[in-house]
Image (cartoon, rainbow, N blue to C red):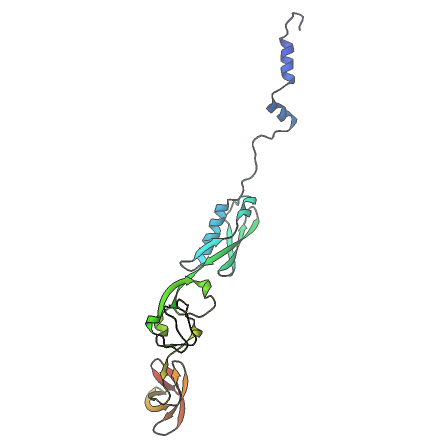
Length: 242
């Protein structure tokens, strides 16, 4: 109370000594105000960058799937475009994701599900059976089912070939499962085209061996009785001397 009996000064002093809690925390150093933490890397942006890099290298129609990318949320946001490189063997690869600024690196697993149209059997085949167009069809299948093996893309490639092994219906036809058809039979009389120095001669000969396209077989010249070797081609039996 002042000499005049006024108590307002006392009340004012009391208010100054008991500030509200926000001000008290601020004065005590316990309140830092709004958060100023740096933004973190967007997982969607990282996934988009990896997917685009994979699509640029993958064949048309391939499906791309990514492994976990949650680690991106622990990285500060990249201020420059992400650099993505892929390594490994399809269908499983690894993406190396590099952020130039700030400098950090992440690795993401990438699966490339590639598909391709290949020849498959429509009916069961037995070993030694001659293959006809009715036995075959074309089906689009994941490459992982026949990766690393030689297959056919056109049924005409093996029309008339014989099955080396038995095959069930719906099976992908591998090159080692069929044998090209015999073009020349043993004992057959064929015309051999002999090429020498730009000149072509036709010689009748007896095939001493059966032959498929690409085979070299022995024949006997019907006129002289001499034996010689010639190659079976799609155009016939040929002997090139030049």
